[in-house]
Image (cartoon, rainbow, N blue to C red; front, side):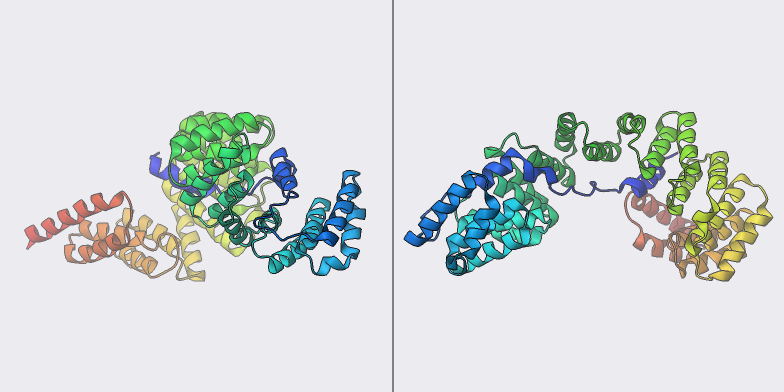
Length: 455
């Protein structure tokens, strides 16, 4: 099987790009690095923060004594009961801090925002409000506050690291990468920022650096499988299926593989490793009650078809449970695959044609069924019927909509109808992408020469 075909199938499982970025770990908010950053916010920076008068100082000193005893709820009650809670940015800020520690993020957000309205350059309030938004996963809201904190002079690792996550969510991986690197200047051992850095390298296509970091992270956090999946994803995209197989097998033996990744493991074994193991892994999935997505099952059948393992394709197809194909879209694809397998095996062609014509009768714009029927007709010297069905496929809907133009053009070349062929081939060329373009240009040029020589 060509690497292009295996690539298309695996991309349907893993995606052609870097895996979806991971959010900031929930454990970060319990980490020593964050505690240090947050607790440091209790310190006053008089240059860019509100002046604390005598009454405010007396209240905050009393609250500080209560906090030292661990009496946070009582401290919060004392602050909120004070009349200063409605006018003092410093008191509002401390209410926000204690509410944050107690897990009342809404109350914390309200009071940090109030403190900023009174004193916009209140660095610690800006910083902690950003922390609240980031903890809620709202990076868009955290972003402007983090920028303001940096403008006010902070280079704290937590601030820079969270800024990296904000840029990452926006798809600005170059800025995110720089932010994660800056975060590690003051927090070099914080794995969160290394994870962010690795993902940025991955997204920017620097596979070597991403690989080294992912491998390091997996060694540091062997029990957190999400990082192993990032590594597996990268191995697959780098064309290192053997490494992907090894790591998927480790997870399989731990019982940690979900259905799509089991199918992926089976496909990789079939293509790169042991056909026997690959078939058994996919067979096991097909029989499993955990398989609840008909598309995943039919993806596995499609892979076997593309890999020219037609007996396996027929077996996998027969193992798809009826309840998975009840929906119309699944049912159509199921019947289409059955017809395709029969045609490729050259078995029971009458049934195959009946299946395809039935699908087309129900949906005259079913480009995929029209394409398969046309291929069958072309191979059985029914050229006129094939040309008609390729044309209908092109104006229909489906994955083979554009490919039908290419096949129709090739059939017209075979029939020495070069002018018509060039029209279809040129139209297909305009929509084609990637490595096919050079070959297609050469083919069109050859057809033009044939046309000239035939005149």
